[in-house]
Image 1 (cartoon, rainbow, N blue to C red):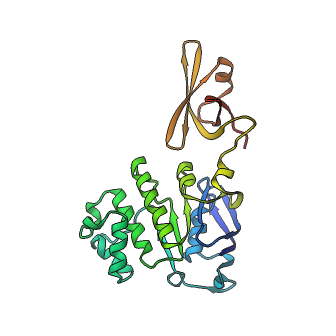
Image 2: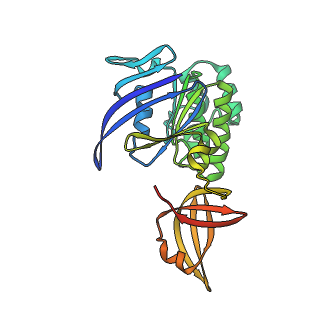
Length: 286
C-alpha cells in the first residue's frame, strides 16, 4: 500500500497554487494521473521519487519514505522512473544502458527479449527510433525490479501505432514484475487501456477518482455511451451541418441541424453520445 498525504505550494503562470493530495494506492495497482497542464501531476511524481520536497508523509507498507524532516533518498526508494525525453546515456549501447543500473545480465536479456530489443542491444541510442529509445528507457527503469514505477507521459511524443505497441509492453512489464505503477497521461484511450484506477487533479486538488470507466464514461439516460471531445469545425453540407470532433486520437463527424450549428462554437469541449447508433452532440457542462 502506497499512502500519500502531501502538501506543497507551487508557483505557476497564474500565481501560487497549493498541491494538496491525500491518496492511498493498492499494491500492484496501475494508476493514471490526469488533469490539465499545471495541475500538479508531474510535481506529485517527483515528490514520490524523492526529487522534490513537500510537507506531509509518503509511506510504502511499513516503510516511511517521508515524514516530517525524515526523507528517504531517491536511490533507496526502489523506484523506476520513465521520462518523456528518454534520458538515455548516448555514449553507451542499449545493453550497457541497462547494465549501468544493475549488473544483472540475465535480467537485461529477459527485458530486451520481452520488448523485442535483443537484436539492437549493441546499438547506440542515437541510431534508434523514438519508440525503440523509449522501450530501452522502460527496460532500464525495470532493471532494479522497482516496487514503484513512475512514468511521466512516456508515450506522448510517439505516433499512434507505436503508442499502441508500447502500451502493450508497459502493461506486460507491469504484470510480469508485479510493480505498482503511477503514470501521468493526457490520452483517454491510453488511460482506459492501461489503468485500473484513475485520479484527476485540478489546481493541485483531487477532483475525481475511480476506475477509468467510472471517471470517463458519462452515460446518461438511454444513451449507449458518452465521450468527451473538442469541436474542431462546423461544415455546412446542403441543408445540414457536420460537426468535426476530436476524441482522443480519433476524428468523428456528427450531423447537426441549423439550430444546433448556431448554438455551438469551434474550440469548445462537447459530449458525443449515441442512442441506437445515432450519435448526438451536446454542450459539456463542467
